[in-house]
Image 1 (cartoon, one colour):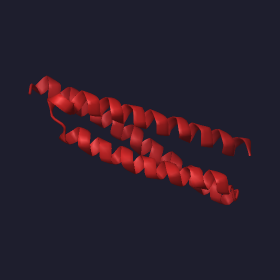
Image 2 (tube, rainbow, N blue to C red; image 1 turned 135 degrees about the vertical axis):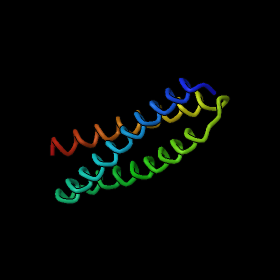
Image 3 (tube, rainbow, N blue to C red; image 1 turned 90 degrees about the vertical axis):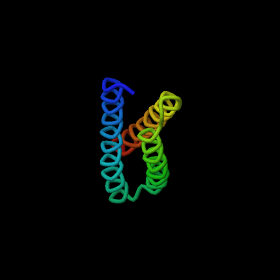
Length: 99
């Protein structure tokens, strides 16, 4: 595998890791806000998202280990999962902001 390809893969992985860390921080903040507001429905949603985030972490690990044949598929799946979790986080943020 070429050095350029390795650098491109590393850049993708770094970007996704950054997104995951941001999601984690936002979920922790949302959890604290929901607990303070006694927003039980949102707490359940946050717990579900934390579980999804763990699955995203595992998929990122798979991406790092993937070879050329599975890299693109794994990358697409991972980006889709990150986008899904991000969308859900935004929805909870909006609910808690409105409350």
